[in-house]
Length: 111
Length: 113
Image (cartoon, rainbow over all chains, first blue to last red):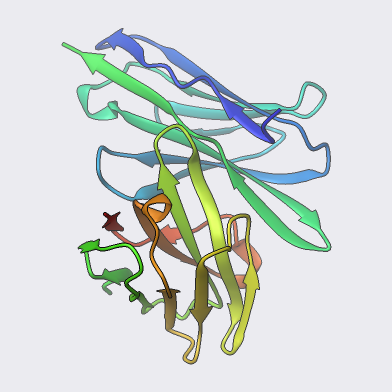
């Protein structure tokens, strides 16, 4: 089993829809979590951090469920410009530190 | 601020050739990383550095070497390229206390024939 897993998608949604992605992690020692966005043939870019209490930034909400070991990203009122691949990143302390990225979930928002 | 820059952007090598990828950052970040990204595999850490003169192995270090002689630069070397090293290589940097908040360079597309 991979340490960090994401549904690869693609998710095809119409403009204005609400879409949610999950990212599961296997190591309970995981400590911090982040979502990145990656446009086609571009580098990943920071999107938002994930806290136990949830984190909201405009149309985006990130949440952490430690009991079930997953994080989620909710996008409300989807825009065409939201089309991208969304990567989750999980950091765990193992003596030093270890950061694992998920393979990403592709989202297509259509008019 | 240029952020994180990488050179070259594209490169084609023949099997057995060597090359060095250069990464530079102007954000005064302590940590720097080299990743490779392959379809369906996500980003995999090759090597990383927590400071000038210090490097460590990541998840897939075999066939690569790195050096960090200056804080702002992190070099990735391929001594004898193999077709399995065909990939997109990303460099990233972060602050010491926020190493999950990584800033990536634009990537280098390497093809080994």
